[in-house]
Length: 399
Image (cartoon, rainbow, N blue to C red):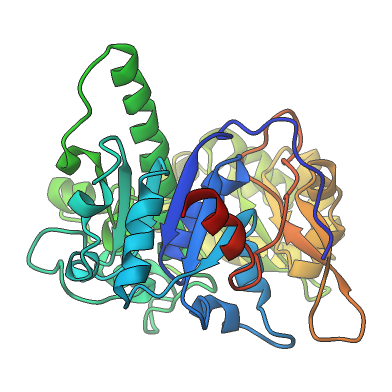
Protein backbone atom coordinates (compact mmCIF):
# COMPACT_ATOMS: atom_id res chain seq x y z
CA UNK A 1 0.00 0.00 0.00
CA UNK A 2 1.11 3.59 -0.54
CA UNK A 3 1.70 5.81 2.46
CA UNK A 4 0.70 9.44 2.36
CA UNK A 5 3.46 12.00 2.84
CA UNK A 6 4.28 13.10 6.37
CA UNK A 7 2.31 16.01 7.69
CA UNK A 8 4.26 19.16 8.49
CA UNK A 9 2.03 19.78 11.51
CA UNK A 10 1.55 17.04 14.11
CA UNK A 11 0.61 18.58 17.48
CA UNK A 12 1.13 15.32 19.41
CA UNK A 13 4.54 14.50 17.93
CA UNK A 14 6.80 13.27 20.73
CA UNK A 15 3.97 11.60 22.66
CA UNK A 16 4.25 7.82 22.85
CA UNK A 17 1.24 5.60 23.50
CA UNK A 18 1.07 1.88 24.33
CA UNK A 19 -2.24 0.43 23.14
CA UNK A 20 -3.45 -2.75 24.81
CA UNK A 21 -6.83 -3.84 23.55
CA UNK A 22 -8.91 -5.15 20.69
CA UNK A 23 -12.06 -4.17 18.86
CA UNK A 24 -13.08 -0.50 18.58
CA UNK A 25 -13.17 1.58 21.79
CA UNK A 26 -9.53 1.81 22.91
CA UNK A 27 -8.24 1.52 19.32
CA UNK A 28 -10.46 4.49 18.39
CA UNK A 29 -8.79 6.54 21.12
CA UNK A 30 -5.42 5.38 19.83
CA UNK A 31 -6.36 6.33 16.29
CA UNK A 32 -7.21 9.90 17.32
CA UNK A 33 -3.90 10.29 19.14
CA UNK A 34 -1.99 8.73 16.23
CA UNK A 35 -3.76 10.95 13.69
CA UNK A 36 -2.20 14.00 15.31
CA UNK A 37 1.30 12.63 15.60
CA UNK A 38 1.52 10.41 18.68
CA UNK A 39 3.58 7.26 18.21
CA UNK A 40 1.03 4.54 19.01
CA UNK A 41 2.42 1.06 19.59
CA UNK A 42 -0.42 -1.43 19.26
CA UNK A 43 0.14 -4.75 21.03
CA UNK A 44 -1.48 -7.71 19.27
CA UNK A 45 -1.48 -11.41 19.94
CA UNK A 46 -0.04 -13.60 17.21
CA UNK A 47 -3.46 -14.07 15.58
CA UNK A 48 -4.02 -10.30 15.60
CA UNK A 49 -6.82 -8.01 16.73
CA UNK A 50 -10.19 -9.64 16.00
CA UNK A 51 -11.17 -6.48 14.12
CA UNK A 52 -8.93 -7.65 11.29
CA UNK A 53 -11.69 -10.13 10.39
CA UNK A 54 -14.78 -7.94 10.93
CA UNK A 55 -16.49 -7.02 7.65
CA UNK A 56 -13.72 -8.84 5.80
CA UNK A 57 -15.09 -9.37 2.29
CA UNK A 58 -11.78 -10.21 0.61
CA UNK A 59 -8.07 -10.39 1.42
CA UNK A 60 -6.65 -10.87 4.91
CA UNK A 61 -7.26 -7.54 6.68
CA UNK A 62 -10.58 -5.67 6.83
CA UNK A 63 -10.96 -2.05 5.83
CA UNK A 64 -12.48 -1.52 9.29
CA UNK A 65 -9.17 -2.50 10.89
CA UNK A 66 -7.21 -0.40 8.39
CA UNK A 67 -9.35 2.63 9.25
CA UNK A 68 -9.36 2.39 13.05
CA UNK A 69 -5.70 1.43 13.35
CA UNK A 70 -4.18 3.81 10.83
CA UNK A 71 -0.97 5.67 11.68
CA UNK A 72 -0.06 3.04 14.31
CA UNK A 73 2.67 0.46 14.75
CA UNK A 74 1.92 -3.20 15.44
CA UNK A 75 3.94 -5.39 17.80
CA UNK A 76 3.17 -9.01 18.63
CA UNK A 77 3.40 -10.02 22.30
CA UNK A 78 1.81 -12.88 24.22
CA UNK A 79 0.45 -11.39 27.44
CA UNK A 80 -0.28 -14.89 28.72
CA UNK A 81 3.45 -15.39 29.23
CA UNK A 82 5.64 -13.74 31.84
CA UNK A 83 8.08 -12.71 29.13
CA UNK A 84 5.32 -10.89 27.24
CA UNK A 85 4.06 -9.21 30.40
CA UNK A 86 7.54 -8.07 31.37
CA UNK A 87 7.98 -6.59 27.90
CA UNK A 88 4.77 -4.62 28.41
CA UNK A 89 5.99 -3.32 31.77
CA UNK A 90 9.25 -2.25 30.14
CA UNK A 91 7.52 -0.58 27.22
CA UNK A 92 5.21 1.30 29.60
CA UNK A 93 8.33 2.85 31.10
CA UNK A 94 9.07 4.45 27.72
CA UNK A 95 5.51 5.69 27.06
CA UNK A 96 3.42 8.66 28.13
CA UNK A 97 0.04 6.92 27.88
CA UNK A 98 -1.29 3.39 28.11
CA UNK A 99 -4.68 2.64 26.53
CA UNK A 100 -6.58 -0.51 27.46
CA UNK A 101 -10.09 -1.90 27.12
CA UNK A 102 -9.93 -5.24 28.89
CA UNK A 103 -12.58 -6.34 31.33
CA UNK A 104 -11.78 -4.74 34.73
CA UNK A 105 -9.42 -6.92 36.74
CA UNK A 106 -7.82 -8.59 33.73
CA UNK A 107 -4.63 -6.50 33.72
CA UNK A 108 -4.34 -6.85 37.49
CA UNK A 109 -4.63 -10.63 37.14
CA UNK A 110 -1.74 -10.54 34.69
CA UNK A 111 0.39 -8.35 36.94
CA UNK A 112 -0.13 -5.39 34.62
CA UNK A 113 -2.24 -3.15 36.82
CA UNK A 114 -1.60 0.59 37.10
CA UNK A 115 0.98 0.18 39.88
CA UNK A 116 3.01 -2.34 37.87
CA UNK A 117 2.77 -0.35 34.64
CA UNK A 118 3.96 2.75 36.52
CA UNK A 119 6.93 0.88 37.99
CA UNK A 120 9.49 2.76 35.92
CA UNK A 121 7.31 5.72 34.99
CA UNK A 122 5.72 7.73 37.83
CA UNK A 123 3.98 10.08 35.36
CA UNK A 124 2.36 7.39 33.19
CA UNK A 125 -1.25 8.11 32.21
CA UNK A 126 -3.49 5.07 32.03
CA UNK A 127 -6.72 5.29 30.02
CA UNK A 128 -9.06 2.43 30.90
CA UNK A 129 -12.16 1.85 28.76
CA UNK A 130 -14.69 -0.76 29.85
CA UNK A 131 -18.41 -1.47 29.72
CA UNK A 132 -19.29 -0.02 33.14
CA UNK A 133 -16.09 1.54 34.45
CA UNK A 134 -13.61 0.37 37.05
CA UNK A 135 -15.88 0.85 40.08
CA UNK A 136 -19.49 0.23 41.06
CA UNK A 137 -21.64 -2.93 41.27
CA UNK A 138 -21.53 -3.56 37.50
CA UNK A 139 -17.79 -3.00 37.06
CA UNK A 140 -16.89 -6.64 36.43
CA UNK A 141 -19.71 -7.30 33.99
CA UNK A 142 -18.71 -7.87 30.35
CA UNK A 143 -20.37 -5.74 27.72
CA UNK A 144 -20.01 -4.41 24.22
CA UNK A 145 -21.24 -1.07 22.89
CA UNK A 146 -24.68 -2.49 21.99
CA UNK A 147 -25.32 -3.24 25.66
CA UNK A 148 -23.89 0.13 26.71
CA UNK A 149 -26.19 1.93 24.27
CA UNK A 150 -29.14 0.23 25.97
CA UNK A 151 -27.96 1.08 29.49
CA UNK A 152 -27.13 4.66 28.50
CA UNK A 153 -30.67 5.44 27.34
CA UNK A 154 -29.74 5.79 23.68
CA UNK A 155 -31.32 2.64 22.25
CA UNK A 156 -34.74 3.47 23.71
CA UNK A 157 -34.91 6.58 21.52
CA UNK A 158 -33.85 5.04 18.19
CA UNK A 159 -36.58 3.84 15.83
CA UNK A 160 -40.28 4.30 15.30
CA UNK A 161 -42.69 4.53 18.24
CA UNK A 162 -44.77 1.52 17.18
CA UNK A 163 -41.80 -0.81 16.72
CA UNK A 164 -39.04 -2.19 18.97
CA UNK A 165 -35.88 -0.07 19.41
CA UNK A 166 -33.22 -0.46 16.73
CA UNK A 167 -29.51 0.24 16.62
CA UNK A 168 -27.55 2.59 14.44
CA UNK A 169 -25.43 1.17 11.62
CA UNK A 170 -22.11 1.95 13.34
CA UNK A 171 -20.61 1.18 16.76
CA UNK A 172 -21.47 4.62 18.06
CA UNK A 173 -20.96 3.71 21.73
CA UNK A 174 -17.41 2.50 21.13
CA UNK A 175 -16.56 5.53 19.03
CA UNK A 176 -17.86 8.03 21.59
CA UNK A 177 -15.97 6.20 24.35
CA UNK A 178 -12.86 6.43 22.17
CA UNK A 179 -13.36 10.18 21.85
CA UNK A 180 -13.57 10.51 25.62
CA UNK A 181 -10.52 8.28 26.02
CA UNK A 182 -8.45 10.46 23.70
CA UNK A 183 -9.74 13.65 25.31
CA UNK A 184 -8.93 12.25 28.75
CA UNK A 185 -5.41 11.36 27.64
CA UNK A 186 -4.73 14.83 26.24
CA UNK A 187 -6.27 16.45 29.33
CA UNK A 188 -4.01 14.39 31.59
CA UNK A 189 -0.96 15.14 29.43
CA UNK A 190 -1.70 18.84 29.75
CA UNK A 191 -2.07 18.56 33.51
CA UNK A 192 1.26 16.73 33.67
CA UNK A 193 2.97 19.55 31.78
CA UNK A 194 1.55 22.12 34.18
CA UNK A 195 2.73 20.13 37.18
CA UNK A 196 6.22 19.79 35.74
CA UNK A 197 6.34 23.53 35.04
CA UNK A 198 5.39 24.11 38.67
CA UNK A 199 7.99 21.57 39.86
CA UNK A 200 5.19 19.62 41.56
CA UNK A 201 5.43 15.98 42.50
CA UNK A 202 3.86 13.47 40.07
CA UNK A 203 0.28 12.56 40.86
CA UNK A 204 -0.39 9.28 42.66
CA UNK A 205 -1.33 6.45 40.36
CA UNK A 206 -5.05 6.62 41.20
CA UNK A 207 -5.15 10.20 39.95
CA UNK A 208 -3.43 9.29 36.68
CA UNK A 209 -6.18 6.85 35.64
CA UNK A 210 -8.72 8.04 33.07
CA UNK A 211 -11.75 5.79 33.62
CA UNK A 212 -14.14 5.69 30.64
CA UNK A 213 -17.31 3.58 30.81
CA UNK A 214 -19.09 2.84 27.55
CA UNK A 215 -22.55 3.35 29.03
CA UNK A 216 -21.53 6.66 30.60
CA UNK A 217 -20.04 7.87 27.33
CA UNK A 218 -23.41 7.26 25.68
CA UNK A 219 -25.33 8.67 28.66
CA UNK A 220 -23.34 11.91 28.46
CA UNK A 221 -24.74 12.45 24.95
CA UNK A 222 -28.38 12.11 26.00
CA UNK A 223 -28.91 15.87 26.43
CA UNK A 224 -31.82 16.59 28.81
CA UNK A 225 -33.13 13.02 29.08
CA UNK A 226 -32.88 12.93 32.88
CA UNK A 227 -33.62 16.63 33.61
CA UNK A 228 -36.80 16.42 31.49
CA UNK A 229 -38.01 13.53 33.61
CA UNK A 230 -37.19 15.26 36.89
CA UNK A 231 -38.44 18.72 35.98
CA UNK A 232 -41.52 17.92 33.90
CA UNK A 233 -42.21 14.23 34.35
CA UNK A 234 -41.57 13.80 30.63
CA UNK A 235 -40.41 10.37 29.50
CA UNK A 236 -38.65 10.68 26.14
CA UNK A 237 -39.91 8.22 23.52
CA UNK A 238 -38.98 7.04 20.06
CA UNK A 239 -40.19 9.39 17.35
CA UNK A 240 -38.76 7.87 14.17
CA UNK A 241 -37.08 10.49 12.02
CA UNK A 242 -38.23 13.29 14.28
CA UNK A 243 -36.69 14.70 17.43
CA UNK A 244 -39.13 14.81 20.33
CA UNK A 245 -40.50 18.29 20.98
CA UNK A 246 -38.98 19.76 17.80
CA UNK A 247 -40.99 20.38 14.63
CA UNK A 248 -40.82 20.32 11.73
CA UNK A 249 -37.59 18.33 11.44
CA UNK A 250 -37.73 15.04 9.61
CA UNK A 251 -36.73 13.00 6.58
CA UNK A 252 -38.95 13.16 3.50
CA UNK A 253 -39.11 11.15 0.27
CA UNK A 254 -38.85 13.04 -3.02
CA UNK A 255 -40.60 12.23 -6.27
CA UNK A 256 -37.50 10.59 -7.77
CA UNK A 257 -37.13 8.16 -4.86
CA UNK A 258 -34.32 9.99 -3.08
CA UNK A 259 -34.77 11.26 0.47
CA UNK A 260 -33.81 14.52 2.14
CA UNK A 261 -33.59 15.78 5.70
CA UNK A 262 -35.15 19.19 6.34
CA UNK A 263 -34.69 21.06 9.63
CA UNK A 264 -37.06 24.00 9.48
CA UNK A 265 -37.96 24.03 13.15
CA UNK A 266 -36.58 27.45 14.14
CA UNK A 267 -39.27 30.08 14.71
CA UNK A 268 -37.55 32.51 12.34
CA UNK A 269 -37.33 29.91 9.56
CA UNK A 270 -40.73 28.26 9.75
CA UNK A 271 -42.72 30.99 8.00
CA UNK A 272 -40.42 31.19 4.99
CA UNK A 273 -40.28 27.40 4.88
CA UNK A 274 -44.04 27.06 4.65
CA UNK A 275 -44.28 29.75 2.00
CA UNK A 276 -41.57 27.97 -0.01
CA UNK A 277 -43.77 24.86 -0.13
CA UNK A 278 -46.86 26.87 -1.02
CA UNK A 279 -48.51 26.72 2.40
CA UNK A 280 -48.86 30.35 3.44
CA UNK A 281 -51.83 29.28 5.56
CA UNK A 282 -49.52 27.35 7.85
CA UNK A 283 -46.96 30.17 7.82
CA UNK A 284 -49.59 32.64 9.05
CA UNK A 285 -51.30 30.37 11.56
CA UNK A 286 -50.70 31.92 15.03
CA UNK A 287 -50.93 28.49 16.66
CA UNK A 288 -47.80 27.46 14.77
CA UNK A 289 -45.71 30.50 15.67
CA UNK A 290 -43.74 28.60 18.29
CA UNK A 291 -42.25 25.14 18.52
CA UNK A 292 -44.70 23.83 21.09
CA UNK A 293 -47.66 24.51 18.82
CA UNK A 294 -45.91 22.98 15.83
CA UNK A 295 -45.06 19.84 17.79
CA UNK A 296 -48.71 19.27 18.65
CA UNK A 297 -49.61 19.53 14.95
CA UNK A 298 -46.52 17.80 13.65
CA UNK A 299 -48.42 15.20 11.62
CA UNK A 300 -50.35 17.87 9.74
CA UNK A 301 -47.17 19.81 8.98
CA UNK A 302 -45.23 16.70 7.95
CA UNK A 303 -48.03 15.63 5.63
CA UNK A 304 -47.89 19.03 3.91
CA UNK A 305 -44.13 18.86 3.52
CA UNK A 306 -44.22 15.26 2.32
CA UNK A 307 -46.81 16.08 -0.32
CA UNK A 308 -44.60 18.90 -1.59
CA UNK A 309 -41.35 16.89 -1.69
CA UNK A 310 -43.15 13.92 -3.25
CA UNK A 311 -44.07 16.03 -6.27
CA UNK A 312 -40.49 17.17 -6.95
CA UNK A 313 -37.05 15.71 -7.55
CA UNK A 314 -34.43 15.86 -4.84
CA UNK A 315 -32.51 18.56 -6.68
CA UNK A 316 -35.64 20.67 -7.09
CA UNK A 317 -36.48 20.33 -3.41
CA UNK A 318 -32.99 21.29 -2.24
CA UNK A 319 -32.73 24.23 -4.64
CA UNK A 320 -36.05 25.69 -3.47
CA UNK A 321 -35.18 25.28 0.20
CA UNK A 322 -31.72 26.72 -0.27
CA UNK A 323 -33.24 29.81 -1.91
CA UNK A 324 -35.59 30.14 1.07
CA UNK A 325 -32.76 29.78 3.62
CA UNK A 326 -34.12 26.50 5.05
CA UNK A 327 -31.47 24.02 6.31
CA UNK A 328 -31.79 20.85 4.25
CA UNK A 329 -29.62 18.18 2.73
CA UNK A 330 -29.66 14.88 0.87
CA UNK A 331 -29.39 11.57 2.71
CA UNK A 332 -26.07 10.38 1.38
CA UNK A 333 -24.79 6.93 0.57
CA UNK A 334 -21.09 6.10 0.64
CA UNK A 335 -20.93 6.76 -3.12
CA UNK A 336 -22.52 10.19 -2.62
CA UNK A 337 -19.92 11.12 -0.01
CA UNK A 338 -17.04 10.10 -2.27
CA UNK A 339 -18.40 12.27 -5.10
CA UNK A 340 -19.19 15.33 -2.96
CA UNK A 341 -16.97 18.41 -3.59
CA UNK A 342 -17.14 19.58 0.05
CA UNK A 343 -15.49 16.39 1.28
CA UNK A 344 -12.90 16.67 -1.50
CA UNK A 345 -12.10 20.32 -0.78
CA UNK A 346 -11.15 19.50 2.82
CA UNK A 347 -9.19 16.31 1.99
CA UNK A 348 -11.76 14.18 3.80
CA UNK A 349 -11.48 11.24 1.40
CA UNK A 350 -7.87 10.08 1.14
CA UNK A 351 -6.96 7.35 -1.33
CA UNK A 352 -4.47 4.51 -0.92
CA UNK A 353 -3.48 1.45 -2.92
CA UNK A 354 -4.60 -1.48 -0.76
CA UNK A 355 -4.13 -5.23 -1.00
CA UNK A 356 -7.63 -6.76 -0.98
CA UNK A 357 -6.60 -10.19 -2.20
CA UNK A 358 -7.03 -9.21 -5.85
CA UNK A 359 -4.18 -9.71 -8.34
CA UNK A 360 -3.39 -5.97 -8.17
CA UNK A 361 -3.77 -3.40 -5.36
CA UNK A 362 -7.09 -1.55 -5.34
CA UNK A 363 -7.37 2.22 -4.99
CA UNK A 364 -9.48 2.75 -1.85
CA UNK A 365 -10.72 5.94 -0.21
CA UNK A 366 -10.49 6.31 3.58
CA UNK A 367 -12.06 8.94 5.86
CA UNK A 368 -9.78 11.86 6.65
CA UNK A 369 -8.57 13.21 9.98
CA UNK A 370 -10.97 15.23 12.14
CA UNK A 371 -10.77 18.00 13.34
CA UNK A 372 -9.23 19.94 10.46
CA UNK A 373 -6.07 21.97 11.06
CA UNK A 374 -4.96 24.61 8.59
CA UNK A 375 -7.96 24.34 6.28
CA UNK A 376 -7.61 20.68 5.27
CA UNK A 377 -7.61 17.28 6.92
CA UNK A 378 -4.12 16.16 7.87
CA UNK A 379 -2.86 13.41 5.57
CA UNK A 380 -3.10 9.83 6.81
CA UNK A 381 0.48 8.67 7.16
CA UNK A 382 -0.18 4.93 6.97
CA UNK A 383 -3.08 2.52 7.13
CA UNK A 384 -3.55 -0.12 9.80
CA UNK A 385 -0.31 -2.13 9.98
CA UNK A 386 0.23 -5.79 9.24
CA UNK A 387 0.31 -8.08 12.29
CA UNK A 388 3.61 -7.52 14.08
CA UNK A 389 4.94 -5.29 11.31
CA UNK A 390 6.97 -3.21 13.77
CA UNK A 391 7.92 -5.88 16.34
CA UNK A 392 11.61 -5.94 15.45
CA UNK A 393 11.87 -2.15 15.32
CA UNK A 394 10.27 -1.73 18.75
CA UNK A 395 12.37 -4.50 20.32
CA UNK A 396 15.54 -2.90 19.00
CA UNK A 397 14.58 0.51 20.37
CA UNK A 398 13.17 -0.38 23.78
CA UNK A 399 13.76 -4.03 24.72
